[in-house]
Length: 463
Ligand SMILES: [Zn+2]
Image 1 (cartoon, protein in one colour):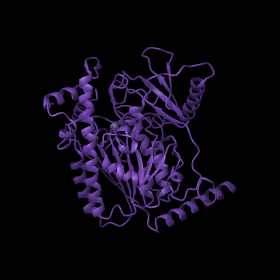
Image 2: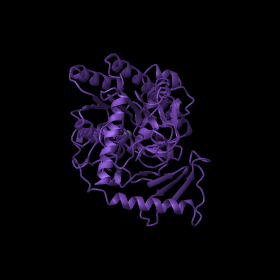
Image 3: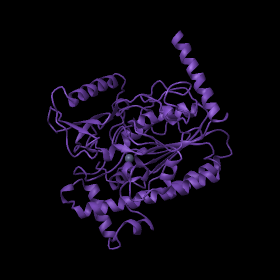
């Protein structure tokens, strides 16, 4: 009983704090996910190519999580984890055929129950209506016209709905999922001219985009990778400019007043750092480390958090920031204490910052799509990262240990001494895997029609 009372008291205090921060009215919550946007391309994350002036400006006005990790390295499991604050082995949304179970509880469901109008505008066809991602969204639109629906069109759809819906009272939860940074890389002007050599013609661009689809990396030359790299840069720059336009429109409608804004990505992109292209086949930094920038009223400005965090922490953080009750099904932890400007670091009335925690990631069996998976699971503790490899028809999973402090690009596997870091981390990962298994569910599938399959093939997924 005492625990229950203390829990109730904690919720009341959290609500009072939230109300004080937001002056009585719950804030709008705006989450923007850029599909396949690697953290290192952003100036706020050390990128030196000047691709993201707008996002860098947002970062300067908010909190940057310098070491944020997706729960998996491709859209289907990663977005399911973002929405449910649960790991892929738990929600079992791990193949192209998967469906997020009705039994899962999402961030949108919590916000909706808390009085939010919930709407999602999505350009990734994997998230189409009927696959369960729309749970909790009163309004859910997925747009995909090959080769891909760009951010400007997605913006028009979102603004159309907002202009029709804005008369309705109440706080808004807006989810925008952009494909601008996802292959195929077809940057519009002026970004193409700014980042791609003038001598490169459309046929050359089609050819290297085709390499992403083929999964045959043996023919990919250094020049091809260099071209893909510049095309990707141009898409990142285009995405940044589009976000500026979107936010200008939201601001004009008063929707950014006091809003909590999150900019992140569902995973990154490999550009042959480890011999591969694309995403969803490994758990290296270039596909796992994502931007996570949070800003808004009541949130610190210009703060960089170095502690490792997971995207499964985002949903509990947003419930915390909006003063809603914690969701017991969520596995992540609130990062709100990192965000509050009154954090003093020495107790007192300010909330203590969360202690460092292990970060886990999973790339589970995915049917025909990822037979070429290199990794299946991983754990990050401090700077030590352990990846569990996959060798087809092999019982013994090879382990790869990296010390990101001295080897941020994972080029030099550390030695696996008996009783050393690899063994300790492998034991911690196994223990965590066992715990998660006890709180997992059976896989569910949804149907993919032939037209959807064709769209996915055009994006580089082999079905
Ligand atoms: Zn994705």
